[in-house]
Image 1 (cartoon, rainbow, N blue to C red):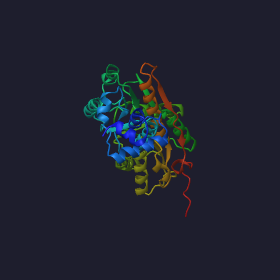
Image 2 (cartoon, rainbow, N blue to C red):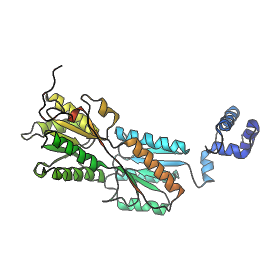
Image 3 (cartoon, one colour):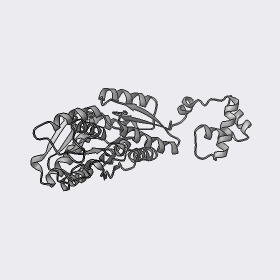
Image 4 (tube, helix red, strand yellow):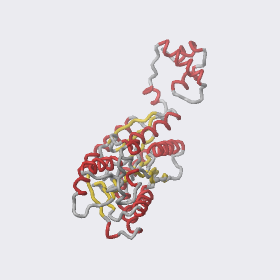
Length: 340
């Protein structure tokens, strides 16, 4: 079966059939449907592999994140996919598990697939030479949420988490909290440093230098539960927790419940990311909204722009991260719980 036969069946030109098979937006919707119907009726299957050998582009993008199980990344990938679909691109998604070695294998495999660009949330301890290599490969790379080194050296899309943490500390201070602890991650990548630095600076501005407490550990819901149980039973338990992400914060809510404490009354809890579950939790979780879907859309748009203009100026896009105040921080410290 050939494109010429499909063209005759659909009463269009061969070039029109070719554009439809390449998912070009230049063909009217009605014509696209007619061509696809003809191809299906004649049993034609488009050989995309052969087509990409004739083209400089494959209309595919690689996406590598370190933890696809985290709802933040699910929402981010949804934003990426929405943007790519509008341009006829398809994402290839992979997860590194925060392993630089696995990440290197994934990058090599995606290069073999000739993806047009890569969206990368770098694994911890990614060498700087990895990011530098993309220029030599003529493959655009956009770092997302994390970056290698102290500052991004290429295209980057992230969220202004330090400003969100500053707003959270100021809000907690106004509610009467002084012992505000940060449940941070155990790593030393840019996202960890961003949170710790933002927290320390916010506490200093509030005059709480002596109350700075950074507790490091794993970042799952279970870890949030176990870490909070241990912390709240210490002699100088905090009255407020700022958590690395919402999963840790949701685990903290479960711990407070087990201890017979009321989140928002006995101990305030703040998460980061504002995943869908945050507003649905009981009590509803205050969270710093990193807007993962918007992050994904912005990253995909930047990658597509870099494909079109490889020599353009490198860009750093940092989206706002507002504090969404809900029940877990809505009451002044020590406010009695209303009886039902």
